Image 1 (cartoon, rainbow, N blue to C red):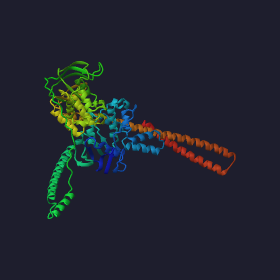
Image 2 (image 1 turned 30 degrees about the vertical axis):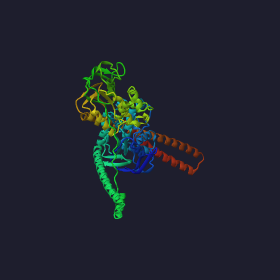
Image 3 (image 1 turned 45 degrees about the horizontal axis):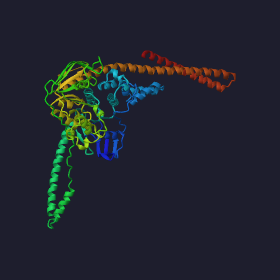
Image 4 (image 1 turned 120 degrees about the vertical axis):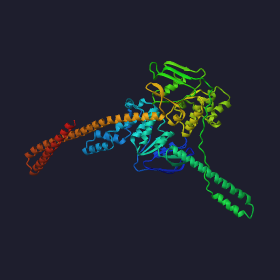
Length: 617
Protein backbone atom coordinates (compact mmCIF):
# COMPACT_ATOMS: atom_id res chain seq x y z
CA UNK A 1 0.00 0.00 0.00
CA UNK A 2 2.68 2.51 1.08
CA UNK A 3 6.46 2.52 0.70
CA UNK A 4 8.83 5.10 2.20
CA UNK A 5 12.48 4.71 1.18
CA UNK A 6 15.42 6.73 2.56
CA UNK A 7 13.36 9.85 3.14
CA UNK A 8 15.11 12.91 4.54
CA UNK A 9 13.26 16.08 5.47
CA UNK A 10 14.58 19.32 6.95
CA UNK A 11 12.78 22.43 8.10
CA UNK A 12 14.46 25.72 9.02
CA UNK A 13 17.84 24.01 9.13
CA UNK A 14 16.62 21.28 11.49
CA UNK A 15 16.52 17.66 10.35
CA UNK A 16 13.29 15.87 11.31
CA UNK A 17 13.82 12.67 9.32
CA UNK A 18 17.06 11.25 7.93
CA UNK A 19 17.04 8.30 5.53
CA UNK A 20 13.85 6.99 7.13
CA UNK A 21 12.32 3.88 5.55
CA UNK A 22 9.30 1.64 6.14
CA UNK A 23 6.53 -0.16 4.26
CA UNK A 24 2.86 -0.63 5.08
CA UNK A 25 1.20 -3.58 3.29
CA UNK A 26 -2.46 -3.38 2.30
CA UNK A 27 -4.78 -4.03 5.23
CA UNK A 28 -2.24 -3.31 7.95
CA UNK A 29 -3.27 -1.18 10.94
CA UNK A 30 -0.41 1.02 12.10
CA UNK A 31 0.13 3.46 14.95
CA UNK A 32 2.74 6.22 14.48
CA UNK A 33 4.29 7.28 17.79
CA UNK A 34 7.11 9.43 19.13
CA UNK A 35 7.54 12.46 21.39
CA UNK A 36 5.96 15.75 20.36
CA UNK A 37 8.05 17.60 17.78
CA UNK A 38 9.71 14.55 16.22
CA UNK A 39 7.89 14.87 12.88
CA UNK A 40 4.78 12.66 13.04
CA UNK A 41 2.40 15.21 11.48
CA UNK A 42 5.14 16.22 9.02
CA UNK A 43 5.34 12.61 7.84
CA UNK A 44 1.59 12.63 7.19
CA UNK A 45 2.00 15.75 5.04
CA UNK A 46 4.84 14.10 3.13
CA UNK A 47 2.69 11.02 2.43
CA UNK A 48 -0.30 13.11 1.32
CA UNK A 49 1.88 15.25 -0.97
CA UNK A 50 1.32 18.46 0.96
CA UNK A 51 5.10 18.57 1.58
CA UNK A 52 7.96 17.28 -0.55
CA UNK A 53 10.87 15.30 0.88
CA UNK A 54 14.39 16.67 0.44
CA UNK A 55 15.62 13.17 -0.39
CA UNK A 56 14.15 9.71 -0.83
CA UNK A 57 10.97 8.32 -2.32
CA UNK A 58 7.38 7.88 -1.13
CA UNK A 59 5.10 5.70 -3.26
CA UNK A 60 1.50 4.57 -2.93
CA UNK A 61 -0.30 1.66 -4.55
CA UNK A 62 -1.64 2.67 -7.97
CA UNK A 63 -5.14 4.19 -7.80
CA UNK A 64 -5.24 3.85 -4.01
CA UNK A 65 -7.41 6.49 -2.35
CA UNK A 66 -6.00 8.34 0.66
CA UNK A 67 -8.23 9.94 3.28
CA UNK A 68 -7.33 12.51 5.93
CA UNK A 69 -9.35 14.87 8.11
CA UNK A 70 -9.80 17.98 5.99
CA UNK A 71 -9.56 21.48 7.44
CA UNK A 72 -11.44 23.28 4.63
CA UNK A 73 -15.04 22.62 5.67
CA UNK A 74 -17.75 24.99 4.42
CA UNK A 75 -18.87 27.80 6.71
CA UNK A 76 -22.47 28.17 5.60
CA UNK A 77 -25.92 26.64 6.06
CA UNK A 78 -24.91 23.28 4.57
CA UNK A 79 -26.24 20.64 6.95
CA UNK A 80 -23.85 18.29 8.69
CA UNK A 81 -25.36 15.28 6.92
CA UNK A 82 -24.79 16.94 3.52
CA UNK A 83 -21.21 17.90 4.42
CA UNK A 84 -20.47 14.26 5.20
CA UNK A 85 -22.32 12.92 2.13
CA UNK A 86 -20.33 15.31 -0.10
CA UNK A 87 -17.12 13.56 0.97
CA UNK A 88 -18.05 10.69 -1.38
CA UNK A 89 -17.31 12.65 -4.54
CA UNK A 90 -18.24 9.80 -6.92
CA UNK A 91 -21.70 9.43 -5.40
CA UNK A 92 -22.27 13.18 -5.45
CA UNK A 93 -21.20 13.44 -9.11
CA UNK A 94 -23.40 10.52 -10.22
CA UNK A 95 -26.48 11.89 -8.46
CA UNK A 96 -25.93 15.30 -10.04
CA UNK A 97 -25.51 13.78 -13.50
CA UNK A 98 -28.65 11.66 -13.05
CA UNK A 99 -30.71 14.86 -12.78
CA UNK A 100 -29.85 15.99 -16.32
CA UNK A 101 -28.83 12.85 -18.26
CA UNK A 102 -31.11 11.93 -21.18
CA UNK A 103 -29.16 9.12 -22.85
CA UNK A 104 -30.88 5.90 -21.76
CA UNK A 105 -27.67 3.84 -21.79
CA UNK A 106 -25.89 6.43 -19.65
CA UNK A 107 -28.85 6.64 -17.27
CA UNK A 108 -28.79 2.86 -16.92
CA UNK A 109 -25.07 2.92 -16.10
CA UNK A 110 -25.51 5.71 -13.53
CA UNK A 111 -28.18 3.85 -11.58
CA UNK A 112 -26.29 0.57 -11.81
CA UNK A 113 -23.15 2.25 -10.45
CA UNK A 114 -25.13 3.96 -7.68
CA UNK A 115 -26.39 0.54 -6.66
CA UNK A 116 -22.85 -0.90 -6.71
CA UNK A 117 -21.47 1.77 -4.36
CA UNK A 118 -24.47 1.49 -2.01
CA UNK A 119 -25.41 5.09 -2.72
CA UNK A 120 -28.92 4.65 -1.35
CA UNK A 121 -27.54 3.44 2.00
CA UNK A 122 -25.23 6.45 2.23
CA UNK A 123 -27.51 8.84 4.18
CA UNK A 124 -28.15 6.18 6.83
CA UNK A 125 -24.44 5.35 7.03
CA UNK A 126 -23.51 9.03 7.34
CA UNK A 127 -26.14 9.48 10.06
CA UNK A 128 -24.74 6.51 12.02
CA UNK A 129 -21.21 7.96 11.89
CA UNK A 130 -22.39 11.42 12.96
CA UNK A 131 -24.47 9.93 15.78
CA UNK A 132 -21.48 7.94 16.96
CA UNK A 133 -19.46 11.15 17.15
CA UNK A 134 -22.12 12.88 19.24
CA UNK A 135 -24.57 14.52 16.78
CA UNK A 136 -28.28 13.83 17.27
CA UNK A 137 -30.88 14.06 14.46
CA UNK A 138 -31.48 17.76 15.05
CA UNK A 139 -27.76 18.57 14.95
CA UNK A 140 -27.24 16.48 11.79
CA UNK A 141 -29.78 18.63 9.96
CA UNK A 142 -28.39 21.93 11.25
CA UNK A 143 -26.05 24.20 9.29
CA UNK A 144 -22.35 23.68 9.94
CA UNK A 145 -21.93 27.43 10.49
CA UNK A 146 -23.73 27.06 13.83
CA UNK A 147 -21.02 24.79 15.32
CA UNK A 148 -17.76 25.70 17.07
CA UNK A 149 -14.30 24.60 15.97
CA UNK A 150 -14.14 21.46 18.10
CA UNK A 151 -17.50 20.21 16.84
CA UNK A 152 -16.53 21.03 13.23
CA UNK A 153 -13.46 18.85 13.63
CA UNK A 154 -15.82 16.01 14.56
CA UNK A 155 -17.73 16.65 11.31
CA UNK A 156 -14.44 16.58 9.38
CA UNK A 157 -13.57 13.29 11.07
CA UNK A 158 -17.01 11.90 10.17
CA UNK A 159 -16.45 12.88 6.53
CA UNK A 160 -13.06 11.13 6.45
CA UNK A 161 -14.56 7.95 7.93
CA UNK A 162 -17.54 8.07 5.57
CA UNK A 163 -15.26 8.08 2.51
CA UNK A 164 -13.74 4.72 3.54
CA UNK A 165 -10.46 5.37 1.67
CA UNK A 166 -7.96 2.61 0.90
CA UNK A 167 -5.50 4.34 3.27
CA UNK A 168 -7.09 6.19 6.18
CA UNK A 169 -4.67 8.55 7.96
CA UNK A 170 -5.82 10.05 11.27
CA UNK A 171 -3.78 12.62 13.22
CA UNK A 172 -4.86 12.74 16.88
CA UNK A 173 -8.52 11.90 16.08
CA UNK A 174 -9.58 11.78 19.75
CA UNK A 175 -8.45 15.33 20.62
CA UNK A 176 -11.93 16.86 20.25
CA UNK A 177 -13.90 13.83 21.40
CA UNK A 178 -15.52 13.00 24.71
CA UNK A 179 -15.23 9.50 26.16
CA UNK A 180 -18.51 8.37 24.58
CA UNK A 181 -17.45 9.41 21.07
CA UNK A 182 -13.99 7.95 21.63
CA UNK A 183 -15.47 4.55 22.53
CA UNK A 184 -17.53 4.64 19.33
CA UNK A 185 -14.49 5.61 17.22
CA UNK A 186 -12.42 2.89 18.85
CA UNK A 187 -15.00 0.25 17.86
CA UNK A 188 -15.36 1.70 14.36
CA UNK A 189 -11.62 1.55 13.73
CA UNK A 190 -11.39 -1.98 15.12
CA UNK A 191 -13.75 -3.06 12.31
CA UNK A 192 -12.15 -0.92 9.57
CA UNK A 193 -11.14 -3.43 6.88
CA UNK A 194 -8.75 -1.27 4.89
CA UNK A 195 -5.32 0.20 5.68
CA UNK A 196 -5.07 2.45 8.74
CA UNK A 197 -2.28 4.82 9.83
CA UNK A 198 -3.00 6.71 13.04
CA UNK A 199 -1.10 9.22 15.17
CA UNK A 200 -2.32 9.13 18.74
CA UNK A 201 -1.15 9.75 22.29
CA UNK A 202 -4.04 7.65 23.57
CA UNK A 203 -2.66 4.35 24.83
CA UNK A 204 -6.08 2.63 24.78
CA UNK A 205 -6.86 3.39 21.15
CA UNK A 206 -3.37 2.26 20.10
CA UNK A 207 -3.81 -0.97 22.05
CA UNK A 208 -7.20 -1.78 20.54
CA UNK A 209 -7.03 -0.60 16.92
CA UNK A 210 -3.50 -1.27 15.58
CA UNK A 211 -1.35 -4.35 14.99
CA UNK A 212 1.94 -2.56 14.25
CA UNK A 213 3.76 0.47 15.63
CA UNK A 214 6.07 2.85 13.76
CA UNK A 215 8.30 4.70 16.22
CA UNK A 216 10.18 7.86 15.21
CA UNK A 217 13.50 7.41 16.98
CA UNK A 218 16.65 9.48 16.45
CA UNK A 219 15.49 10.75 13.00
CA UNK A 220 14.74 7.19 11.84
CA UNK A 221 11.50 5.19 11.80
CA UNK A 222 11.56 1.78 13.48
CA UNK A 223 8.79 -0.79 12.97
CA UNK A 224 7.46 -3.03 15.75
CA UNK A 225 4.88 -5.81 15.55
CA UNK A 226 1.98 -5.61 18.00
CA UNK A 227 -0.01 -2.93 19.80
CA UNK A 228 1.34 -0.11 21.98
CA UNK A 229 1.85 -2.15 25.16
CA UNK A 230 3.74 -4.80 23.19
CA UNK A 231 5.83 -2.07 21.51
CA UNK A 232 6.70 -0.59 24.90
CA UNK A 233 7.92 -3.95 26.22
CA UNK A 234 9.90 -4.80 23.09
CA UNK A 235 11.49 -1.38 22.91
CA UNK A 236 12.49 -1.57 26.58
CA UNK A 237 14.11 -4.96 25.93
CA UNK A 238 15.84 -3.59 22.84
CA UNK A 239 17.19 -0.60 24.77
CA UNK A 240 18.41 -2.83 27.60
CA UNK A 241 20.21 -5.11 25.13
CA UNK A 242 21.64 -2.13 23.28
CA UNK A 243 22.84 -0.53 26.53
CA UNK A 244 24.44 -3.81 27.66
CA UNK A 245 26.18 -4.31 24.31
CA UNK A 246 27.40 -0.70 24.26
CA UNK A 247 28.79 -1.10 27.79
CA UNK A 248 30.56 -4.35 26.83
CA UNK A 249 32.04 -2.84 23.65
CA UNK A 250 33.26 0.26 25.48
CA UNK A 251 34.94 -1.96 28.11
CA UNK A 252 36.67 -3.92 25.33
CA UNK A 253 37.77 -0.70 23.66
CA UNK A 254 39.09 0.68 26.95
CA UNK A 255 41.05 -2.53 27.62
CA UNK A 256 42.57 -2.46 24.13
CA UNK A 257 43.45 1.24 24.41
CA UNK A 258 45.28 0.58 27.67
CA UNK A 259 47.40 -2.02 25.86
CA UNK A 260 48.09 0.43 23.01
CA UNK A 261 48.98 3.27 25.39
CA UNK A 262 51.22 0.97 27.42
CA UNK A 263 53.20 -0.69 24.63
CA UNK A 264 53.04 1.77 21.69
CA UNK A 265 56.53 3.13 22.51
CA UNK A 266 58.16 -0.31 22.97
CA UNK A 267 59.73 -1.63 19.80
CA UNK A 268 59.05 -5.25 20.73
CA UNK A 269 55.33 -4.57 21.20
CA UNK A 270 54.81 -1.84 18.59
CA UNK A 271 53.41 -4.24 15.97
CA UNK A 272 50.85 -5.68 18.43
CA UNK A 273 49.92 -2.17 19.56
CA UNK A 274 49.32 -1.04 15.97
CA UNK A 275 47.28 -4.19 15.35
CA UNK A 276 45.07 -3.44 18.36
CA UNK A 277 44.70 0.19 17.24
CA UNK A 278 43.46 -0.95 13.82
CA UNK A 279 41.04 -3.37 15.53
CA UNK A 280 39.66 -0.50 17.60
CA UNK A 281 39.16 1.58 14.45
CA UNK A 282 37.23 -1.28 12.83
CA UNK A 283 34.96 -1.87 15.83
CA UNK A 284 31.29 -1.30 14.98
CA UNK A 285 30.22 0.16 18.30
CA UNK A 286 26.45 0.46 18.77
CA UNK A 287 25.11 3.83 19.83
CA UNK A 288 24.65 4.57 23.48
CA UNK A 289 21.01 4.57 24.53
CA UNK A 290 19.71 8.11 24.77
CA UNK A 291 16.52 8.07 26.82
CA UNK A 292 13.73 10.32 25.59
CA UNK A 293 13.57 13.15 28.07
CA UNK A 294 10.36 13.15 30.09
CA UNK A 295 9.78 15.99 32.52
CA UNK A 296 8.36 14.81 35.83
CA UNK A 297 5.55 16.81 37.43
CA UNK A 298 5.56 17.38 41.16
CA UNK A 299 2.53 18.94 42.80
CA UNK A 300 3.16 20.61 46.19
CA UNK A 301 1.64 18.97 49.24
CA UNK A 302 -1.47 20.74 50.59
CA UNK A 303 -1.86 21.42 54.33
CA UNK A 304 -4.46 19.30 56.19
CA UNK A 305 -8.11 20.36 55.98
CA UNK A 306 -11.08 18.79 57.76
CA UNK A 307 -13.78 17.08 55.69
CA UNK A 308 -16.01 17.80 53.96
CA UNK A 309 -14.20 20.34 51.80
CA UNK A 310 -17.20 21.04 49.53
CA UNK A 311 -20.89 20.15 49.84
CA UNK A 312 -23.70 20.84 47.38
CA UNK A 313 -27.25 20.82 48.72
CA UNK A 314 -30.06 20.77 46.11
CA UNK A 315 -28.00 22.98 43.78
CA UNK A 316 -28.98 24.07 40.29
CA UNK A 317 -26.44 25.67 37.96
CA UNK A 318 -26.46 27.20 34.50
CA UNK A 319 -25.48 30.27 32.54
CA UNK A 320 -28.88 31.98 32.36
CA UNK A 321 -31.50 32.55 35.07
CA UNK A 322 -34.26 29.92 35.07
CA UNK A 323 -32.33 27.80 32.55
CA UNK A 324 -30.35 25.31 34.64
CA UNK A 325 -28.06 22.85 32.90
CA UNK A 326 -27.75 20.75 36.06
CA UNK A 327 -30.28 20.59 38.88
CA UNK A 328 -30.88 18.89 42.24
CA UNK A 329 -27.16 18.38 42.87
CA UNK A 330 -26.45 16.75 46.25
CA UNK A 331 -22.72 16.08 46.34
CA UNK A 332 -19.85 15.95 48.83
CA UNK A 333 -16.10 16.12 48.25
CA UNK A 334 -13.49 15.10 50.84
CA UNK A 335 -9.73 15.56 50.73
CA UNK A 336 -9.03 11.94 49.81
CA UNK A 337 -11.50 11.83 46.91
CA UNK A 338 -10.32 10.90 43.40
CA UNK A 339 -13.36 11.38 41.17
CA UNK A 340 -13.69 11.22 37.37
CA UNK A 341 -16.73 12.78 35.68
CA UNK A 342 -18.35 10.72 32.93
CA UNK A 343 -20.91 11.88 30.39
CA UNK A 344 -21.15 13.12 26.82
CA UNK A 345 -19.93 16.57 25.81
CA UNK A 346 -22.70 19.08 26.40
CA UNK A 347 -24.13 17.21 29.38
CA UNK A 348 -22.58 19.64 31.86
CA UNK A 349 -19.25 18.21 33.06
CA UNK A 350 -17.35 21.47 32.49
CA UNK A 351 -20.27 23.40 34.00
CA UNK A 352 -20.00 21.36 37.20
CA UNK A 353 -16.23 21.91 37.33
CA UNK A 354 -16.72 25.67 36.94
CA UNK A 355 -19.27 25.61 39.76
CA UNK A 356 -16.84 23.77 42.05
CA UNK A 357 -14.04 26.19 41.13
CA UNK A 358 -16.17 29.24 41.95
CA UNK A 359 -16.06 30.55 38.37
CA UNK A 360 -19.80 29.94 38.06
CA UNK A 361 -22.37 30.72 40.75
CA UNK A 362 -25.26 28.43 41.60
CA UNK A 363 -28.75 29.44 40.40
CA UNK A 364 -30.35 27.89 43.48
CA UNK A 365 -29.48 25.67 46.43
CA UNK A 366 -26.46 25.95 48.68
CA UNK A 367 -22.73 25.44 48.04
CA UNK A 368 -20.61 25.19 51.22
CA UNK A 369 -16.81 25.28 51.11
CA UNK A 370 -14.29 24.93 53.95
CA UNK A 371 -13.08 28.34 55.10
CA UNK A 372 -9.40 27.78 54.26
CA UNK A 373 -10.03 25.77 51.10
CA UNK A 374 -7.64 26.45 48.20
CA UNK A 375 -8.65 25.28 44.74
CA UNK A 376 -6.50 24.59 41.68
CA UNK A 377 -8.28 24.75 38.30
CA UNK A 378 -7.08 23.62 34.86
CA UNK A 379 -9.10 23.93 31.64
CA UNK A 380 -7.86 23.22 28.13
CA UNK A 381 -8.91 26.66 26.81
CA UNK A 382 -6.54 28.38 29.26
CA UNK A 383 -3.58 27.74 26.94
CA UNK A 384 -5.15 30.21 24.50
CA UNK A 385 -5.41 32.84 27.25
CA UNK A 386 -1.68 32.87 28.09
CA UNK A 387 0.12 36.07 27.05
CA UNK A 388 2.39 34.91 24.22
CA UNK A 389 4.73 37.88 24.73
CA UNK A 390 5.45 37.10 28.37
CA UNK A 391 7.81 34.45 29.73
CA UNK A 392 6.82 31.72 32.21
CA UNK A 393 8.91 33.53 34.83
CA UNK A 394 7.03 36.81 34.28
CA UNK A 395 3.65 35.06 34.45
CA UNK A 396 4.53 33.17 37.62
CA UNK A 397 6.14 36.24 39.25
CA UNK A 398 2.85 38.11 38.81
CA UNK A 399 0.76 35.14 40.00
CA UNK A 400 2.93 34.63 43.08
CA UNK A 401 2.51 38.30 44.03
CA UNK A 402 6.14 39.37 43.75
CA UNK A 403 7.65 36.48 45.69
CA UNK A 404 11.49 36.38 45.64
CA UNK A 405 13.02 35.16 42.38
CA UNK A 406 14.41 31.91 43.87
CA UNK A 407 10.91 30.85 45.00
CA UNK A 408 9.40 31.65 41.60
CA UNK A 409 12.12 29.72 39.78
CA UNK A 410 11.80 26.83 42.24
CA UNK A 411 8.06 26.62 41.47
CA UNK A 412 8.81 26.58 37.73
CA UNK A 413 11.59 24.04 38.23
CA UNK A 414 9.10 21.65 39.80
CA UNK A 415 7.51 21.45 36.34
CA UNK A 416 10.71 21.15 34.32
CA UNK A 417 11.37 24.80 33.49
CA UNK A 418 15.10 25.51 33.71
CA UNK A 419 16.30 29.12 33.52
CA UNK A 420 16.41 29.10 29.73
CA UNK A 421 12.84 27.78 29.32
CA UNK A 422 11.55 30.00 32.13
CA UNK A 423 12.86 33.03 30.24
CA UNK A 424 11.50 31.94 26.83
CA UNK A 425 8.38 33.72 25.54
CA UNK A 426 5.19 31.67 25.82
CA UNK A 427 4.63 32.04 22.08
CA UNK A 428 7.76 29.94 21.48
CA UNK A 429 6.73 27.12 23.84
CA UNK A 430 5.22 23.81 22.69
CA UNK A 431 1.68 22.80 23.60
CA UNK A 432 3.02 20.43 26.25
CA UNK A 433 5.19 23.16 27.80
CA UNK A 434 2.21 25.52 27.95
CA UNK A 435 0.22 22.79 29.70
CA UNK A 436 3.01 22.37 32.26
CA UNK A 437 3.00 26.14 32.85
CA UNK A 438 -0.73 25.94 33.57
CA UNK A 439 -0.13 23.04 35.98
CA UNK A 440 2.40 25.26 37.75
CA UNK A 441 -0.03 28.20 37.83
CA UNK A 442 -2.85 26.16 39.33
CA UNK A 443 -0.77 24.43 42.00
CA UNK A 444 1.96 26.81 43.22
CA UNK A 445 -0.01 27.69 46.37
CA UNK A 446 -0.57 24.01 47.30
CA UNK A 447 -4.33 23.67 46.65
CA UNK A 448 -6.41 21.16 48.61
CA UNK A 449 -8.31 20.12 45.49
CA UNK A 450 -7.37 20.12 41.81
CA UNK A 451 -10.06 20.40 39.16
CA UNK A 452 -8.74 19.15 35.82
CA UNK A 453 -10.84 19.62 32.67
CA UNK A 454 -9.20 17.69 29.79
CA UNK A 455 -5.58 18.14 30.95
CA UNK A 456 -4.00 15.74 28.42
CA UNK A 457 -4.86 17.33 25.05
CA UNK A 458 -1.34 18.71 24.46
CA UNK A 459 0.57 15.91 26.18
CA UNK A 460 2.27 12.96 24.50
CA UNK A 461 2.06 9.47 26.03
CA UNK A 462 5.14 9.83 28.23
CA UNK A 463 3.98 13.23 29.52
CA UNK A 464 0.58 11.72 30.32
CA UNK A 465 2.33 9.02 32.32
CA UNK A 466 4.25 11.72 34.21
CA UNK A 467 0.99 13.56 34.97
CA UNK A 468 -0.59 10.32 36.18
CA UNK A 469 2.30 9.68 38.56
CA UNK A 470 2.19 13.25 39.86
CA UNK A 471 -1.55 13.00 40.56
CA UNK A 472 -1.10 9.67 42.32
CA UNK A 473 1.62 11.19 44.53
CA UNK A 474 -0.56 14.22 45.32
CA UNK A 475 -2.38 14.07 48.68
CA UNK A 476 -5.28 16.39 47.90
CA UNK A 477 -8.59 15.73 46.15
CA UNK A 478 -8.81 15.37 42.36
CA UNK A 479 -11.84 15.98 40.15
CA UNK A 480 -10.99 14.84 36.62
CA UNK A 481 -12.67 15.29 33.24
CA UNK A 482 -10.76 13.33 30.60
CA UNK A 483 -11.35 11.26 27.48
CA UNK A 484 -8.13 9.35 28.25
CA UNK A 485 -9.39 6.08 29.80
CA UNK A 486 -5.91 5.04 30.94
CA UNK A 487 -5.54 8.24 33.00
CA UNK A 488 -9.05 7.85 34.44
CA UNK A 489 -8.48 4.21 35.40
CA UNK A 490 -5.09 4.91 37.01
CA UNK A 491 -6.09 8.07 38.94
CA UNK A 492 -9.80 7.91 39.83
CA UNK A 493 -11.29 5.58 42.42
CA UNK A 494 -14.85 6.91 42.05
CA UNK A 495 -16.98 7.81 39.04
CA UNK A 496 -19.76 10.39 38.77
CA UNK A 497 -22.08 10.30 35.75
CA UNK A 498 -23.27 13.65 34.40
CA UNK A 499 -26.41 12.95 32.35
CA UNK A 500 -30.06 13.95 32.03
CA UNK A 501 -29.51 17.28 33.78
CA UNK A 502 -27.96 15.88 36.95
CA UNK A 503 -24.82 14.31 38.42
CA UNK A 504 -24.91 11.09 40.41
CA UNK A 505 -22.42 8.42 41.53
CA UNK A 506 -21.86 5.70 38.93
CA UNK A 507 -21.50 2.35 40.67
CA UNK A 508 -19.93 0.32 37.86
CA UNK A 509 -16.33 0.69 36.64
CA UNK A 510 -15.07 2.35 33.46
CA UNK A 511 -15.22 -0.89 31.48
CA UNK A 512 -18.87 -1.27 32.49
CA UNK A 513 -19.55 2.27 31.30
CA UNK A 514 -17.76 1.52 28.04
CA UNK A 515 -19.98 -1.55 27.51
CA UNK A 516 -23.07 0.53 28.31
CA UNK A 517 -22.10 2.97 25.55
CA UNK A 518 -21.44 0.14 23.08
CA UNK A 519 -24.83 -1.44 23.82
CA UNK A 520 -26.60 1.90 23.35
CA UNK A 521 -24.79 2.52 20.05
CA UNK A 522 -25.63 -1.00 18.87
CA UNK A 523 -29.33 -0.41 19.59
CA UNK A 524 -29.25 2.97 17.81
CA UNK A 525 -27.45 1.41 14.83
CA UNK A 526 -30.04 -1.37 14.57
CA UNK A 527 -32.88 1.16 14.61
CA UNK A 528 -31.11 3.29 12.00
CA UNK A 529 -30.58 0.28 9.73
CA UNK A 530 -34.24 -0.70 9.95
CA UNK A 531 -35.26 2.84 9.06
CA UNK A 532 -32.70 2.90 6.26
CA UNK A 533 -33.98 -0.38 4.82
CA UNK A 534 -37.48 0.96 4.27
CA UNK A 535 -36.05 4.28 3.11
CA UNK A 536 -33.81 2.48 0.63
CA UNK A 537 -36.74 0.57 -0.91
CA UNK A 538 -38.66 3.82 -1.21
CA UNK A 539 -35.71 5.57 -2.85
CA UNK A 540 -35.13 2.68 -5.24
CA UNK A 541 -38.80 2.79 -6.20
CA UNK A 542 -38.52 6.54 -6.71
CA UNK A 543 -35.43 6.08 -8.84
CA UNK A 544 -37.18 3.39 -10.88
CA UNK A 545 -40.20 5.65 -11.37
CA UNK A 546 -37.96 8.54 -12.35
CA UNK A 547 -36.15 6.40 -14.91
CA UNK A 548 -39.42 5.23 -16.48
CA UNK A 549 -40.77 8.80 -16.51
CA UNK A 550 -37.72 9.90 -18.49
CA UNK A 551 -38.25 7.00 -20.91
CA UNK A 552 -41.95 7.89 -21.39
CA UNK A 553 -41.13 11.55 -22.02
CA UNK A 554 -38.41 10.61 -24.48
CA UNK A 555 -40.78 8.29 -26.40
CA UNK A 556 -43.55 10.91 -26.36
CA UNK A 557 -41.16 13.40 -27.92
CA UNK A 558 -40.10 10.83 -30.52
CA UNK A 559 -43.76 10.16 -31.46
CA UNK A 560 -44.33 13.89 -31.91
CA UNK A 561 -41.17 14.24 -34.00
CA UNK A 562 -42.17 11.31 -36.24
CA UNK A 563 -45.70 12.65 -36.71
CA UNK A 564 -44.25 16.03 -37.69
CA UNK A 565 -41.90 14.30 -40.13
CA UNK A 566 -44.79 12.33 -41.69
CA UNK A 567 -46.80 15.54 -42.02
CA UNK A 568 -43.87 17.23 -43.77
CA UNK A 569 -43.41 14.23 -46.11
CA UNK A 570 -47.10 14.34 -47.06
CA UNK A 571 -46.81 18.07 -47.85
CA UNK A 572 -43.74 17.34 -49.97
CA UNK A 573 -45.63 14.57 -51.80
CA UNK A 574 -48.51 16.98 -52.61
CA UNK A 575 -46.04 19.56 -53.91
CA UNK A 576 -44.18 16.92 -55.98
CA UNK A 577 -47.42 15.72 -57.62
CA UNK A 578 -47.80 19.15 -59.26
CA UNK A 579 -44.55 18.56 -61.18
CA UNK A 580 -44.38 14.81 -61.71
CA UNK A 581 -40.91 13.29 -61.08
CA UNK A 582 -40.91 9.50 -60.81
CA UNK A 583 -37.69 9.17 -58.80
CA UNK A 584 -38.61 11.95 -56.34
CA UNK A 585 -42.09 10.48 -55.77
CA UNK A 586 -40.60 7.02 -55.22
CA UNK A 587 -38.14 8.37 -52.61
CA UNK A 588 -40.89 10.31 -50.81
CA UNK A 589 -43.20 7.26 -50.73
CA UNK A 590 -40.39 5.08 -49.34
CA UNK A 591 -39.53 7.65 -46.65
CA UNK A 592 -43.22 8.00 -45.75
CA UNK A 593 -43.64 4.22 -45.44
CA UNK A 594 -40.52 3.76 -43.28
CA UNK A 595 -41.38 6.71 -41.03
CA UNK A 596 -44.94 5.42 -40.57
CA UNK A 597 -43.59 1.98 -39.57
CA UNK A 598 -41.16 3.63 -37.11
CA UNK A 599 -44.05 5.65 -35.66
CA UNK A 600 -46.13 2.51 -35.07
CA UNK A 601 -43.20 0.75 -33.34
CA UNK A 602 -42.49 3.81 -31.20
CA UNK A 603 -46.15 4.05 -30.17
CA UNK A 604 -46.00 0.40 -29.03
CA UNK A 605 -42.87 1.21 -26.94
CA UNK A 606 -44.54 4.32 -25.55
CA UNK A 607 -47.68 2.40 -24.48
CA UNK A 608 -45.53 -0.30 -22.79
CA UNK A 609 -43.48 2.32 -20.93
CA UNK A 610 -46.64 4.14 -19.86
CA UNK A 611 -48.01 0.85 -18.50
CA UNK A 612 -44.80 0.26 -16.48
CA UNK A 613 -45.00 3.80 -15.11
CA UNK A 614 -48.61 3.25 -14.00
CA UNK A 615 -47.58 0.05 -12.19
CA UNK A 616 -44.54 1.69 -10.52
CA UNK A 617 -46.64 4.62 -9.34
